[in-house]
Amino acid sequence: MGKIVSISNQKGGVGKTTTSINLSASVGILNKKVLVIDLDPQGNTTSGMGIDKRGIKLSAYDVLEKEISAEEAIINTGFKNLDLIPSHINLASADAGISLFSGKESKLKNKISHLKNKYDYIFIDCPPSLGIITINAFCASDSVLIPIQCEFYALEGLSQLINTIKVVKRHHNSELELEGILMTMCDLRLNLTKQVADEVKKNFPEKVFKTVIPRAVKLSEAPGFGKPVAYFSKFNKGTFAYKSLAKEFLKNNNDR
Image 1 (tube, one colour):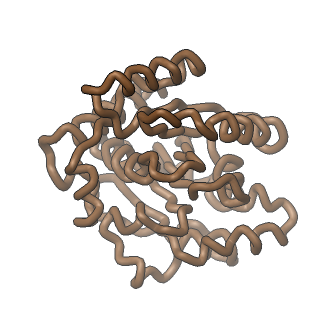
Image 2 (cartoon, one colour; image 1 turned 60 degrees about the horizontal axis):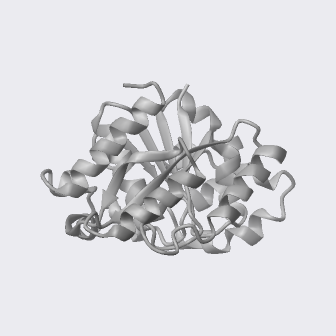
Image 3 (cartoon, helix red, strand yellow; image 1 turned 90 degrees about the vertical axis):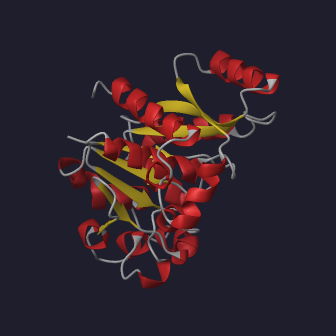
């Protein structure tokens, strides 16, 4: 059985989509079969994998809102072991539509849970909010990975996100766990980076990834070329960091 991991932070600009693209690609490179579900209406994970959003016929929106199967929306990215259910801007209005259905929290779970038999890992790029789409992702997931930017306000809003995870666990998905907290956009030359990392570790012992993601020009440039950084530039600190994260992630899941 595979594992479903939501990548979430309601605070924007923390490296959530960068992590969705590059962790999934790096796990694929390590010979694991991976599916990414882009639930962010902005669709940056979709375009960051080189998919032209204008040419998409079926998307995550259709999976949630219409009577189609998840399989019908899956497309191959062309990258090793990496498939995608792309996003669509209509997801921005999906909160209202989903709320009309009974069992609204479990719509995504009902559509994708069987895919755990086909993929080793399914990563969900959540929208930067804690609305019903994110709740759907949490209900469908085994764990939540939280990227946090190495800045002064890193912990801002984190307690709300952790509380949402606890509420979903208590009422909808008793198996949901915290996969880990990932420090992103780190400038290792700054004392602030160490201070923030120490503060996060103090609050969440044993749940902070040892790998930290540095600020790297190539990480910023790669999405513009529609490629994960490992396919855009093999020898740079961004590529090395996400390969290290992928190995740590697999080790944490006893899957080397």
